[in-house]
Image 1 (cartoon, one colour):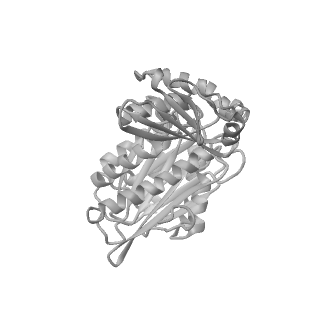
Image 2: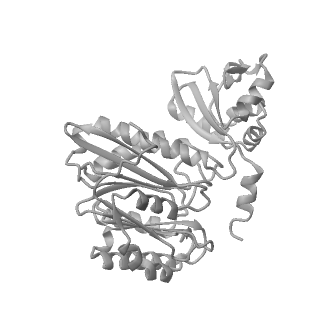
Image 3: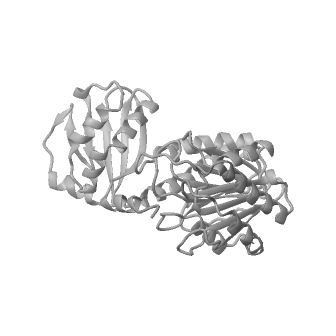
Length: 400
C-alpha cells in the first residue's frame, strides 16, 4: 500500500472549494464535501475546555443524526471560537443554509472552522458563496480534492493528503485523508482538522473504535509547540459504496487507516511552523506505554531541548533534565540516550561520543533520538520538532 504518491479516491464523496473573502489574502477559504445517502461517521475532538462553536455544533449534529453525515462545510481564516452565542448562531446559519441548498436535514451537516480566535464569523460571506460552492462540487476528481485541501489551510505551507487501498476478494476498499495543521500541535489533539473518507460499509460504533485506535498511535503522538487548539477535529466517514463491510476486513482496514493517519501526522509535523528539523523520539523499556508517552511529551515540549535541536546542538543534558521533569519515577542512573547512531549518555552520565557527528545527525531534516529507561518492556514512538526564530515570527504577527 502507498500512502502518499497516488490518490486512491473512495466512491461516494464530492468535493469543492471557493474564495469567500474570509482570508485577507484572497486565497481559497471555504470548502465542501457531500456524501451519498447512508454515509456513516465518527469523530474525535479537542480536549481543550475552550471549544469553538463548530466543535460544539458538530458533536450535537453527529449525536442527533445517530452517526450519519451527508455534508461537511469548512471555513478557514476564522476559528469561530470565543464568539459567544452569536458564534453558535452563525454556525447554525451556515449549516442550515447548506442543508437547504442540498435538500438535507440540518443535523446531517457537519461544520468545521479554523483560523484566528475571538473574531466574529462573517456568516454572510459564507452563505453568499454557498450556491457557487455547491455548483462546483465534483465526485472522484483529484483536482477537486486538492482544492479542498488548500481551502482548509491556515499557516500551512502545503496541503496534506494521503490515501491507500486494499483488496477484499474481488472488491477494492479505498481510504483518503485530508488534513491541515502547522502550529498549536500537541496530543489530545493538535491544531488540526483531519477528514478521512472510505467507501467501506460500517456502523458509527465500528468507525469510532477504529478511529480512536488510529489516533492514539498517530495524531496523539506528535507535538510541535506543546499547545492544544480549540477547534481540533478528526472525522471519519464511510459511504459503503465498495460493498465491503468493515467487519469482514477489520484488520486490513485498521492497518490501512493507521497508514493514512500516520502519513498525515508526519506531514503535519514536517510542516510545523518554522520547523527545520523533525525529531523521531523513541522511548524504550518503560513500565507502560503511557509512561513512555509521558517521558516523550516532557522532552518534546521542553523549550531548552527544542532550541538546542534548532541549533543542531547535541546537548543531551537538556534531554535528561526533561526526562526527569516528566513525573515518571525514573532512576537517573539507568537512563541511556542515543542521538542518531551514537550513545551520548549512559547510566545517567556522559560517555565518549563524536560531537561533530552528533551535530551532523541533528542538522539533518530528520533525526532519531532514543531514550532507554531500563524500567520495563513498554515503548512508544513520538514525532516532534525543533523551535526556531521563524516560529516566533509567525506567531508574533498572527493576528496583525
